[in-house]
Length: 295
Image (cartoon, rainbow, N blue to C red; front, side, top):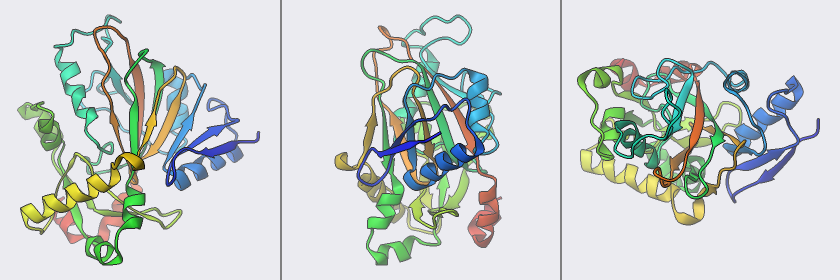
């Protein structure tokens, strides 16, 4: 099988064709994995998958996370992004708390940075898409790091950032209850991430990034906001307009993404996300006392 890799944006992202994600040889998957490491976001058109097929494909990248209790698909490998009730198959009321919770996905973020064991990547498949709206936007934090002045890079190398799910969801007006807060305590990760395959560096920033440990609060917030603004400049992002059957894999170590609105009263949207855990990262954190002390 011969695959074709076509760049999507100037500094990250690629569309891959000539593959069947439900029937990948080891050689072809290795090529897909190589494109993932190189480009950060890889897009596949015309790849309809059911849940079992998506799990099998996702597990090629590593072990899957289980979804937290605030998601309708709690306890499964899926984070369901949808306005369709999982029990009835009908569209939810726009005032449904589950719809309100999903507004947090419209903030720029990387998945699972608020967890002690971070994520390697996410796989999102389009099962039903609205006629208009509901795009997903992507940005590269590797491009941001590589464009920084060397003096700023040197200042950020070795820094640790605290990521807090409760804090980030509050930015969109959603308040966790006591049990949900206990389920999602803050986690700490190196601000600068190094890809073990390519050696290239990126930044773990986004909506969940609350503060840089040891920095003055105002200085910390200013730096994190500045880095985020650099990443999401209009000329730096890739906007994906979904078609039913699309699949996207993105690197949570090196990219950010966000959902965009659609009319939930007129259209149905069902996206299924599997999230691949990155337990190998824990060994890489051994040299960061701020992380080991927090644990």
